[in-house]
Length: 579
Image 1 (cartoon, rainbow, N blue to C red):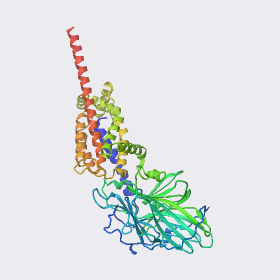
Image 2 (cartoon, rainbow, N blue to C red):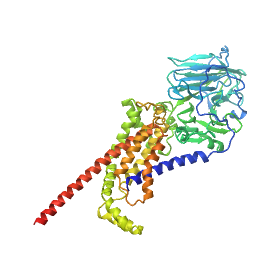
Image 3 (cartoon, rainbow, N blue to C red):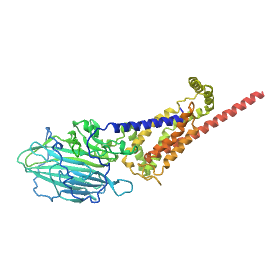
Image 4 (cartoon, rainbow, N blue to C red):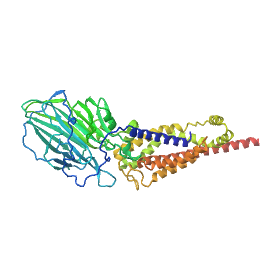
């Protein structure tokens, strides 16, 4: 198969893949009345504004789970009750080098999360805001429920400190709530160098009776992407958005927003379980300390937070005068694949490479190792491209040898085409006989390109999903590998390489219309690439240039060999004639 057909095959398969993904996005939506906002919100010029009661929507009773009936005995050591009241505040703001967080008085819930290391746009002061109580319904909540006593996310808590700076050491952010002789102390331990937050809920029981409590932790949000207009090449358009959950036995499972509307999960999960709300590049996860939890999802169409995922732990008995402690870890931040496994097993699975995960994961691992050596993601892509080219060198060599031999047969195929122009079946038969006689396999160039297509698509997902490459600079004009080439230089290089490759490649059996289509393909392909991430175009353009160089060398070598054979044959014939 000639190189033009290979290029055409790549284009069709790649576009077919993108169209399939797009079809899934466009036609799997269901109608729902959900607040529509942009994927990332800008930061207010005054992030210290207190909570506005008109925006602080009270959760419905359905947001509060029923307590678990499974009882586990408490092993906590009894402690004395502390009746001292902390300083009252309706909001607490915490800043670290990585995060800016705000907690509401209602439930001591996390209602604002700004990622300070991730600008909304390259070289701009505004940062990505994952949660914002003012105009982006998305929050993380916790509470305790039981038959005798409840501490829920609807209760009003008081904070020990209103404004906290976390610079060198972890800091405990403490909230308290008093109810019916019991005290709940909710503590968030926040570190300066981590997106993980340790959450402890401690109940001091002075109710004169034993109480049983189950811990619940939940994340709820709206769907800001519903009916939102996005471009065909917007990276976040194809990324998974929805809820996910995991345990060691069952692995990772997901429910996109449509699934959350149609399905209701209620299942017991074992050790290593966690829940999450996931989107492109960033996510919120909650990891319980309990070895058994009940994972639940919920959809409330008329709520400002219609999509909810939670877990509920088995009930724990707390005797009068004793304390009960419930622990969990929250993660609010980017999908950094080298850090997530240390927080919880399987947390890196939130990086969704789709069906090509088996190829994409090793590719990213290799890319990350190269980056650790060269310190630049652009050069890492260059070296990865060269390594991939070396891996497929022999296959490519066979492909280009086959094409070079077919190129030598081009004049004879043209003659056959003229001879049998009125009998296409006869032409194809004679052409195949010619291939057989000259020992040329017309499919010799097909297998290598078919093998490389999954690698190309897998790398596409690596560049699409890996937050590590978000806004990563390369050289000169390429200062963001996750955005298109601003001056279209890489697409132009790719187009030039494809045009030159066409000139080296045979086109046996093609009618004039097919030839015109193939000549147009470099332009069409490069126009499409003009809107893709420059990191992906860098890989493809460099691969095209290396392939052109390899094909040129092999073609010249075979031409030289054929010329040598022709000279020897001529000399032999002349010698015979003289005799």
